[in-house]
Each structure stands twice: as C-alpha cells, then as structure tokens.
Amino acid sequence: MKKVKITVMKVACYPDLIRTYENPMEHPCDMREGQTFTANGWRKPEGLCDSAWDSMSPFVMTLAHGGEGLYDGWMRNSRSAMISCNDGFRPVSFLLETLDEDAD
Image 1 (tube, rainbow, N blue to C red):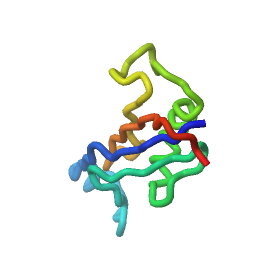
Image 2 (tube, helix red, strand yellow):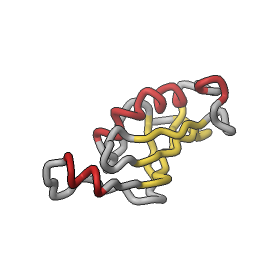
Image 3 (tube, rainbow, N blue to C red):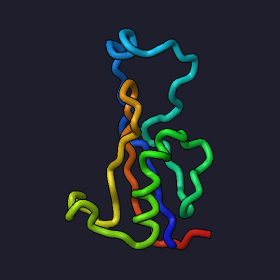
Image 4 (cartoon, rainbow, N blue to C red):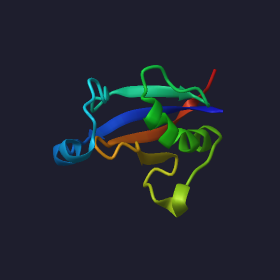
C-alpha cells in the first residue's frame, strides 16, 4: 500500500449562506491553503478535519491500493484526485497524490 499526500488547494467561504443558515460556531475550520498531510492507508492524518476525511477517505484508499484513472481519466495525473469536503458554508478543495513510498 502506498502513502497519499493530501494538499489543501483552496479554502472558500460563503458569508451570505453562513448568516442565513448556520448556527454560530466558534471554530468551524482550521484548514489553510498549502497545508499538507500524509495518509498511511486508512488512518486519518492527525490534524485533518473529520468531515474532510469522511469525504476523501474512499479516494485515498483507492489511490493507496494502486488505483489510477479515477472517473475515466478525469485528472491529468492518473494517480491523483481533487476532492472537496462536504461543508457547504466553507468548502475546502484537496489534491490527493499517490506517493512512491509505501505506508508503514
């Protein structure tokens, strides 16, 4: 099984939706553009949001097990995927890339 690098590519925020629909939150999201994590198989990397992991973990596992060409070649790099978390108020886009090194 291979390691998978997870990079925060974009962090969006929709204040109009937050004002209209969300209950106040003290600390909704910690992700910063350029932040990276490394997944060792099924284990969620420390510091990665639970909700984001729930959205991306099936793709991480596919890539970690050698999967390529997801969705009929949608990515230029066949050993990668662009995945967003499921937060409709603050969506974060993550680039997943298979590394050549094996997971521990």
